[in-house]
Image 1 (cartoon, helix red, strand yellow):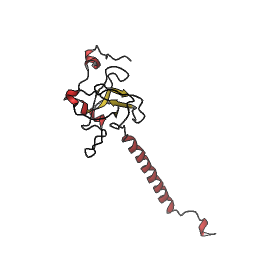
Image 2 (cartoon, helix red, strand yellow):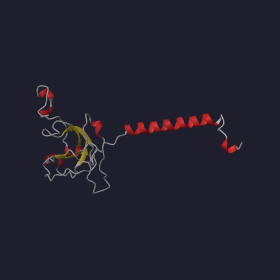
Image 3 (cartoon, one colour):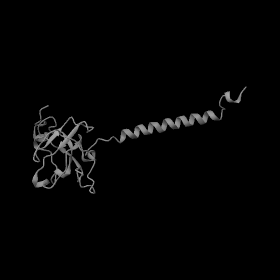
Image 4 (cartoon, one colour):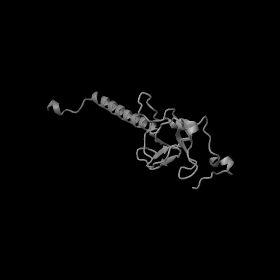
Amino acid sequence: MSSKLRVPSCRLRPALVRASLLGALLLALAAFGSMACEDNGIGRSCDVLADAGQTQAVYNNQALECPSRICLKPLRADSITKDVDTGPYCSAVCSKDSDCDGQKRDSNDPADKHCQKGYACGVAFVVGPLCCKKLCLCKDFLGDSLQTPLTCDPAQNGGGTACQE
């Protein structure tokens, strides 16, 4: 019988089993790791598809460039944001500030219009489809504190909000 047609030895089989199990384990760890580090795109540049003035907040809730589909251009209140040149950015629904890690401005690039100060979780709109929803908001547009508007506070509105479902 030719030596090329022999069945693998008994010593080789356990090594193949161990290598197969190790490969399966590494593949499972890689898949689990990619689920834990989901990129929600907060801070990416996006298009609100509207030509709104600097003192008007607008959003696009069908922005394909944002994983959440939410693109915001916040209200620019001159008393707070007089010199802010931050552009529209991808946001996402949140429950706390730590949900809002996102892309920030590269201070070495003068053309970069990303958020400078980071993001906080808060209510951006009190009307429309995003009424009273907590979203990741660029701190460049916020004052000293971020408070939930009274119309969105269930304690002030008999257990509900002023938003229409």
